[in-house]
Image (cartoon, rainbow, N blue to C red; front, side, top):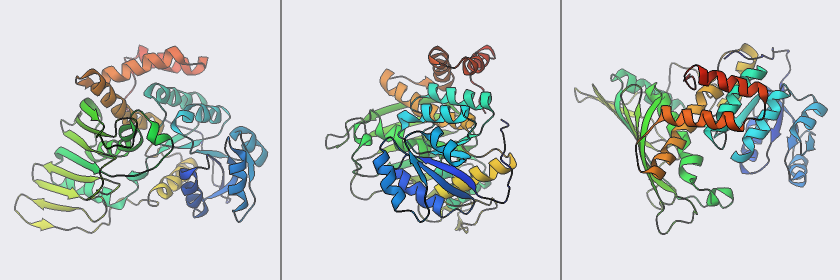
Length: 374
């Protein structure tokens, strides 16, 4: 999708950060380390918290509870949305219609229907909405992808994810904390590694008896991908001892051998001739940075050039669709086709859409046979 660019005028892009909680602090550090951007405003419903954060900054910034008001007051050119998932849709919608491109935290929204609404809003407004899938900005992941491709492409790709974080706050109260708040990273990475989109899923969620989460903190899901490959995700968020990397532990099986990555160190590959290879982590693709620093710099670069970034909303919706279909599979005890899941989400988006212009785009997708897989 084409979008309005903001040509480089020799000055940093002026950004407003919405949300000063835990992730907001991480984004503050990324913004401070990025010469391509300048923080001009902090926004939070708790303005006292935002003001307290502002006092610790080296340069003065505006503070408020309304992103549009702060952007107008400061000449902000873009919004970085680090609010809780439930706020992603209203915050991003308002910004796009105010002529402000948005870089948002994952997931794209609380539901796929809301994600589709945001994709349509981006089309209506002509503004860029990019979701920061920070795990894609990892040189080891790119090397792993190159290894898989060199082996002929994976027929089976697996991720084990076993961690035991005590977050407190909203994650402890979510219905699907592992799938919605964490596994979306690995599912998105699997789409990247396999160069395909999801076709179907069978999933079982569960919550170990010692879990400190209210919702299901564990799951096993099997996805069929458009390439014919199978992707398997399994793990829990309450597994103390011998924990995996935050990136997960990966294995790919291909025609000419296998590759594996523990999530922290250089991936390794073995071809069918039995020779173990340990390639450098350098990749032929130049990443602009690691983690959220990489997504921030790509956001700015694409705003300047018009190139389509990883995480552009139309494509990123499919990662959340994998999560939502997996939840549906668990609740219905059946294999779910992603096409049917997306159709249901599109129908829900049309029913609930408040903007006539956005509704027209959503209805045009329905008329064309469903959400266009990008």
